[in-house]
Amino acid sequence: MSLKANIAVFISGGGTNLQSLINASRAGRLSGKIVLVVSRSENAYGLQRAMRAGIDTFIYSPKKYLSREAAHADLVEMLESHSVDYIALAGYLKMLPRPIVVKYRNRITNIHPALLPKYGGKGMYGHHVHEAVLAAGDRESGVTVHLVDEIYDHGRILLQRKVPVLADDTPETLAARVLQVEHEIYPEALENLIQGKYT
Image 1 (cartoon, rainbow, N blue to C red):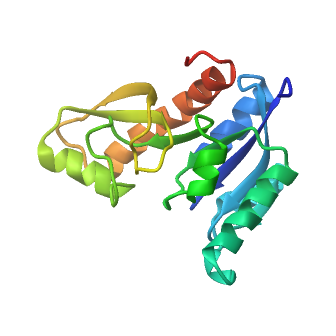
Image 2 (cartoon, rainbow, N blue to C red):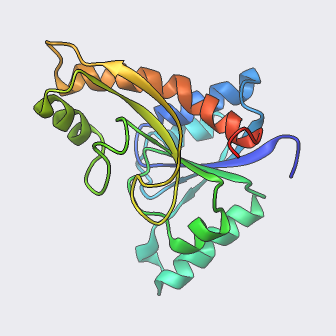
């Protein structure tokens, strides 16, 4: 593996966590280079962030292919052509194809806007998570970075950080505070993984 690991980031929307990883790589806080950004939507704003940073992009739309197997093979080929060592999911909402999970086992990370294992699983993303936290009356929420396996939000937890829930919080205000912490800890967790600190 190269001294500077090659990272692919999978996004679905605005790409603010992608931006935090780009910034960390440029600042030397992440000993990895983002070589590819993958999105299922050509309208994801994160693609513009990638293009501004000079990073290759790939629109992964399985419906364009004759079969799921053909779609998966094309994605694997794209990752291999960029010599990808690690995959970081940053707001990517779909389950990764099993061949990708198997090929990159223990080298795929995801960031989740809650303290897993609470508020994880299918349908628990974005504002749905923050609404559930507030509805439950929890006094704290947080951020989890975990490894990705074949089950939503299930893989080994690498790093968590708590965020207080305030009495007057709305899903929007809580989301904003959680997102700020996401930007802080995602580069840190990914760097620790690259450096072999999670045995």
